[in-house]
View 1: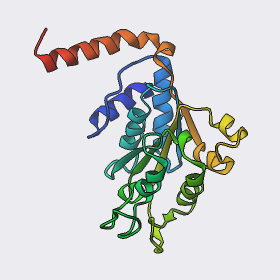
View 2: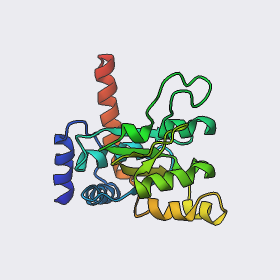
View 3: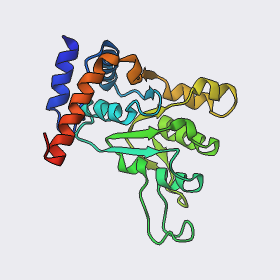
Length: 215
């Protein structure tokens, strides 16, 4: 079947994550990932915390034509707002106190590869316009810089929030939502693919036994 061939392809790709499970809900997600991977379009992974959005983002990268390029991830909710811009776009020497040397940002690091923007729903409004420009025009300036930098990056974003609600409450830009949700994929929680629980349990028991050298 298409799903079996896809699992075999993922297993053969160097650096591809192991995705455990055979539930139809999971099969549907993986087939959607494969279809998205064959394009250059932006993908929005939606799902609750703990559903493995970064795992699926890495699988998408491994299946894509950019698999030999870098996979760069950043969690938009884990970095203070004051630091997030410089983490994304980098900074020039002297841009602020402590900027002793030029530092590339995640967009530069992901050139010719995939940039994974995790928890995009937590992105501050002030940065959303800059992210939109970087996606649309594939260019940006470092913090404290004036030179326009061009990058060739595939964007995969993820959120555990309802972005449509965030747009309605003016917490998220509608134009950025439009750009991000070209190819939305919803990852089901484990309670919606219960047939995978035993397989997952066996996988982790086996892994822990190996790690601890126990039966």
